[in-house]
Image (cartoon, rainbow, N blue to C red):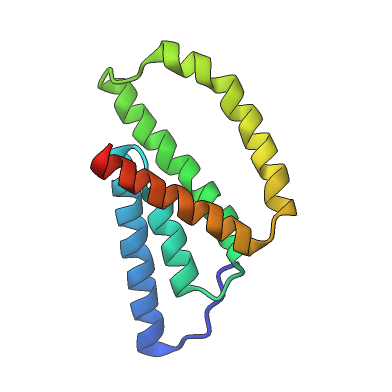
Length: 129
């Protein structure tokens, strides 16, 4: 559950930032097909007092509707490669099950390290790859 100990103007500012960053997270995911979760996780870690492990889960669940909406738009535009999609379904689902199992076993500091390394690697690859 979202933990807030704010009153008055600070609570209004928090709510505004939360809605604004959520909007941009959804827009980023729709525009690029990825990245919305990074912004949402950053927002949750900076603006809430929730446990970081809970923020990872909240972020993962928030991506589901964002991804569905974006995927539907890409599908309508004819931008979906179904042969690649069919090939990746089973390994992705299997990896998701393994990842959920490991998520419960790893300390939060290792989750942060893995997440940060993937974000940095992806960013460098996009810029220079």
